[in-house]
Length: 211
Length: 164
Image (cartoon, rainbow over all chains, first blue to last red; front, side, top):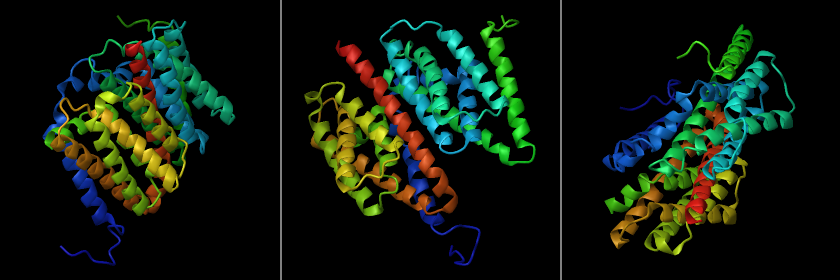
């Protein structure tokens, strides 16, 4: 089918992009890509991918990093999601080496509270301070992931899974953070920060009321 | 040949190395990026043929360098881009870990690396011309680079621990 050159429906080059995208899609669907089943069993990619998603503390902290970064604007919109995984692996390495790191669970809960409060207060922290806060919390989160890594069946797949999952949660947070451009978006975001902080306090208290 | 391709697309470290190189080459121009895809393919083929000759931390270390260059937002010129491609290919070749290297397997590795990197770079070049995406892609590039570096750091630490 010939495309109208004056059409505004498709931007120039869209057909070429579609061809590349279709090619990549076919690559993903190839039977070979579904082999090496250790990537799908416990301890593989799926386990690693699900690890940050299965804990409320990890989940909220990652999303909060993205929301806070987005609300702080450039360069922190990309700097926080870049710094977090890099510092997270420092914690991961400590976990792999099984070196003791005190207050890991408390540190993770505090990260949820602090990041939630930062969003609630619309705190425009200086770049170095924001990076230091997010990086320090990243160490605690990484330790929790890394401690499970040596015992996993496929450590490479597990680590790829949890890093990607963490990054996708950050991107989700950034996407949520862009709501502040909408009418009342800023208020909604600040309220969500308050909810995150309250949940963080509940996690810190040991999640009373949950069996 | 399918065995070689299969080993490439099922190795997380190989995929991380290629992802890192794709992110690092974003925006360097079609000619240079396709040339680098060729360098990476040749490098991957050469190392896939000799996988046992490298220390276990070499591949993760190469992945870390490639990932960090992307997350730092560097726009590599010809020589640096070729070096990054060489390192990414080296990591990919080692990570594919062909049980019994054969000509067919090695050609499969090279072809797959060339196809994935060349295809992705050409696709991203097209996407980069779209005004809206042109603002988002540099952020995505840095984020992807940090993921790649993080995976490389973790696997490097794990390799050192296993070796020790």
